[in-house]
Length: 238
Image 1: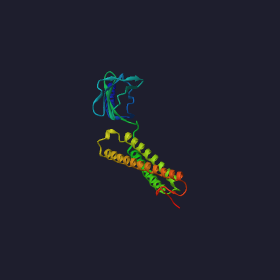
Image 2: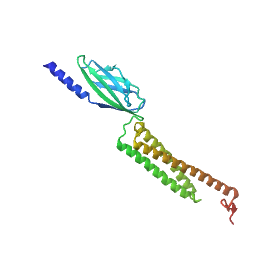
Image 3: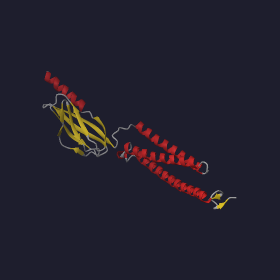
Image 4: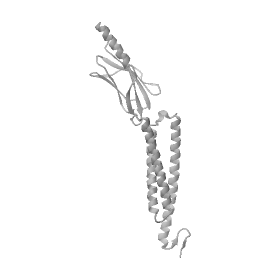
C-alpha cells in the first residue's frame, strides 16, 4: 500500500513538473544556470536545450551538479535572441520525473513589459517635441542682435536633446524591439520613423551650423570695420 501511494505521488509530481515554466530573462552572451529542485532523487539530467530557431544547443543527456536538493548546470551558448526551451528529468533509480521550462535572452537582460515599452516611446516623442520647440524658438531669437546669444543657447539645448532622443531610441530598439521581432510591421514602422527623424535632425543641424557660421562672420565684420558698418550692404550707414 505504501509503495502504491509513493508511486502515485511520484507520477502526480511528474505531471506537475512537466508543465513548462520560465527561468527568467537573461542578457545576451551571459552564463545561465539551469536549475532544478527535488528531494529524494539520486540524479538529474538536462536532456536538451533548444535554441529560439529550434536547433539544438544541448542534444545529449547531460548530468546536472547536485548540491543538497538542488541540481544545476551552467549554460553559456546564449548568443541567440529569443526563447530557449530546457528539457530534462530527475530519477530516484526506480522512476523518472520529467520537467521542462524556458528562459529568454535579450540584449539588456531585463524583461520589458508592454506598458514600459509605451512609456519609453512616449518619453522619446516628448523629448523630440521639446527639442523641436527649442529649435524653433532658437531660430526666432537668432534674427535679432540683442537676442542672438539666447537663440544660440536654445539651439545648443535643442541639439543636445536631439542627440539624447536618438540615444534613447537606439536603446528602445535594442532592448524592446530587438531583432526577434524584426519581421513585424510595428518594428518596420518604428525603424522608418527613426530614420526619418534622424534625417530631419541631420538637416536641421546642418542649417544651424551654416546659419551660425554666417552670423559669426557678420559680427566679425562689424567688429573689424567699426560702428555704422552694415555687413549686408557692405557699406557704412550714415
